[in-house]
Image 1 (cartoon, rainbow, N blue to C red):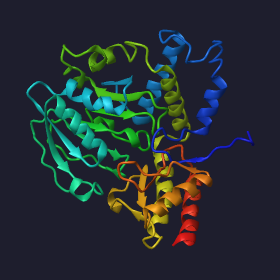
Image 2: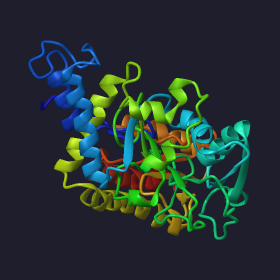
Image 3: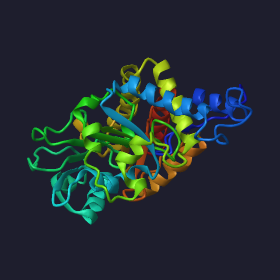
Image 4: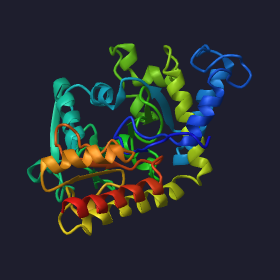
Length: 363
């Protein structure tokens, strides 16, 4: 496919997908494994689709070392729906839940949880404009659960160690934008969730990994599509699931295993992030990173230029150079490079080189 035109894609989500995965999906689009139809067309009750979803689950268990006392669900509604489903399922009536706020998405999770019951902010870095991790926490030892966001997509802050929480309190995590980017010890968590559209696949499916004892908390009066226990018992097939998105996620899991697993993927991700951060740090202040070095995300790298006019020029010229998706989130402005799993080292180097050349022309 020598005439294939592919840009370097730094979009924050939907983000880049591995070329190999896209090519396999293309090859199977009209005829999936001799069925004479696409995965998009087949019954979600068929043996063929059952194989797709079961294989995806098995591969994810293998990648993350997930034990059998956890259920894996492929749901809809994005991580944003999980902000409401979590307290509905895991916070008993009259109980309170603790939240750690380190950016836009954890702040949004708190807002949703407060609509449904008692919610405490146990730590927040909003006073520093979310450029670091909390230094202190005020956890309630009786909290129904502690929720934190492992990687803040907008502000570019990432936890590399779990917050130390009171013994016996379940730990819950939104790992949307660094899901399968590096190993995670799932056994430390009561529940993890992730929108797939960063590292794991296209938009449309959300992965939820829930420990069995958490499913026992689900109250009896929830609408069925918001009921973790029922959705887990039905193995994500209570209604028609986002079947093509699940198929794509499954292909990405297979690709990740082929790459050597999450430890090997993390090594590449660290190299890519270092290339971009070095370009920022060596610019003499022309490029300014948002996050203190100890909390810098490996996935989302926000930075500013000397003026908004230069930022607009940077984005325009970068796009012309085949470097796509570098405008920062509309709520914070600036620039942002999202270097998810499928972004190549060559892509990171191309961005670094462009940054150096742009500074020479405009510094």
